[in-house]
Image (cartoon, rainbow over all chains, first blue to last red; front, side):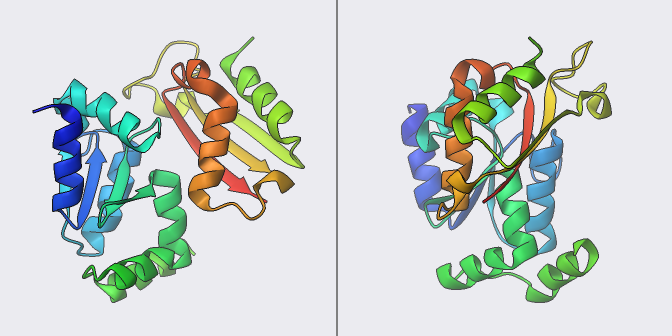
Length: 119
Length: 85
């Protein structure tokens, strides 16, 4: 399967997908770690894709979104952003709103706790 | 020219920002992936420009990526962007 087909199926077939360096339980980059940490802490169910395990995916995902960096977060097939954007949206509450709008289950108390400690 | 100076010059030209700081934070990543002797691999950028008004977060980031260009971006290991209008 080509990387592009593979990426389309993963992004289309899962509500929340994080393309990252490493895995959600063992991230291998500070930026990937931060986004995975937010999703883990908020109790969001998501598919992690380790781009370090596949050079085709690593380049393919950058072409797919026309975005040069990893991590990349997708919700219901839509590209949300990388580490800076996800962090800003977490702190502003926009990420909660996005999950609510898209019908993605998450722990609101945990999200509030993140804001409490990083406000 | 240092990578840091190239980033600064490209953003200055593209956006004539009110505020622009480019910090080489490579030292704090010593020993991590992408670190190289002499730094110039990891950067924190704060940019404030009117050009970003009415742009979504994604659009702001995309505009900065475009201003830097693929050649310069390929030489940067990590880039943290704080973009405001």
